[in-house]
Image (cartoon, rainbow, N blue to C red):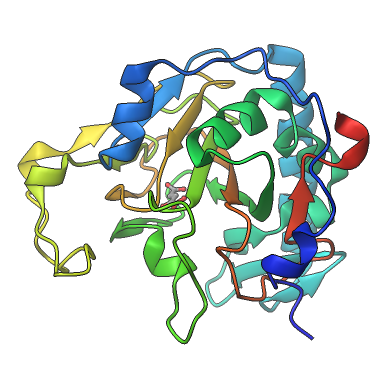
Length: 272
Ligand SMILES: O=C(O)CCC(=O)C(=O)O
């Protein structure tokens, strides 16, 4: 049975008294609502990022012993082992299933608090806890897209319950993100064309208006399901790894996501 049935999971009342040390500004909310992004700098301390980096190292090491894409230890590894040399890790879906330290980070009030403010709800369903690896010259890249393409697969798989997209994605920099190592890139709304449902028309992005986001390990980007983004390969000598978390408004998601414990409801009752 699918793990992701948004409605029924939210029958108990949300935990009381959940607070976050972060109160978003009007400008940050506007950036989010208008298909842009904002960055909270230095959100996680060096020791916290070091713990995440160690988890990424372990996941990468595990991947080197695998030959095929699939479930492993609670997470879903998407791999390319077709070339000589290291196995290329395209992504580890629900990485926290194998590395609980990543799950703990993704329920931290510094991520969850802003996400709930943006959703306008007291609780959410965590759909994504994903490790992205871009190792030097491994060729991993992400074409221009909006995350709504991944959330809404038709057939009732998605409902915009809050009228503002119902989804928040966060990207925590596990390594410094530089111009050379395949940084996230965004374009403003008027630098692309969209169909009548607001979906990006492939090939319509004006590349000249790309906004690369560089930053330090510990910084976090926030954006919504309509933001147009992508990234180029890492052509530097250093890794570029990010932890991606995704939070949906109650009742928005109707899909199954792989990984042990995926689609959990946050904040957890004991977090209040
Ligand atoms: O890791 C990247 O550079 C791409 C991330 C991305 O496209 C996404 O989170 O939707």
